[in-house]
Length: 374
Image 1 (tube, one colour):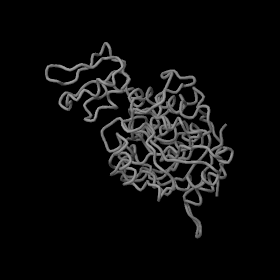
Image 2: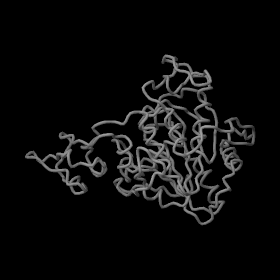
Image 3: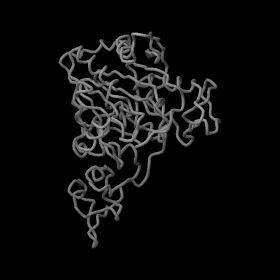
Image 4: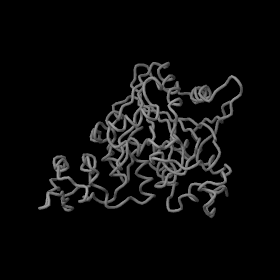
């Protein structure tokens, strides 16, 4: 049974949430890790511009300062997105991070986009006990680090029910090709109306599966295509997309396997901030109102037990009226008879697979002991 450390968001005079976060990670015994002289990747979601539910940079600075105090060399990091947006290459990604307040003067460390300019700079890491993925394409800077720390905004998610430590580590650390492999059970296709005939995709295709028709538009030979997603990563015009999507259980399982590839064999520590629990991912350029009141901060060494503790805390909370949660049918219950808020919001997803599959492959345990921190 893993220990998960919890503190609420109440503050007395003379105290602050930032001081409480520092106290929490101290009590969770982050000092077990030898940070001295080590490069430390702090995996964070910088937030899609327009979304205001993402974590403020103030939280990150507490973690950065703590790691520096312990002799570490921290940097904030994320990988480029697969979808169209303002974080799908390193230039716009860094602009987005700066716009949302993440720059060295506010956090005390540098931002590094782990999979490089176009999302092509990755490492194929082994997945111990992997069932769907024997290897995972992880951003190189993340794999180059000696230690991984995840700082996560816990919220709902339309694809896998919830987003916390497992998703931030798994999907978030996957390169653009890695995200393709997690999301997609098929092979990419060309959107002809967007194709400019620049031929960059063909240059990066190891299978020589891309050719150009009489209209000078790209065509993918599905018999030769390996489904690696490199062409999606290099297309500057978003003219290449998935043909099929992974089911929610398979997607959740693949995310857990990618998280295993990230943390396996090196020290790791994880923090979930459970505030502004929005129903959808911070990848959206907007955020709906929070579905439950702010709950608190949780930390520990086991990302599976950490996320499970957050799920239980959210499901035990009273919904806020006037939210998407209050508008949905409340037909789904968890094992304790409480309303299953995540399934009630996203009835076509199954959030349990991130937890159950993570436990199955040895990423962590769903059983936990909650330790209260004042």
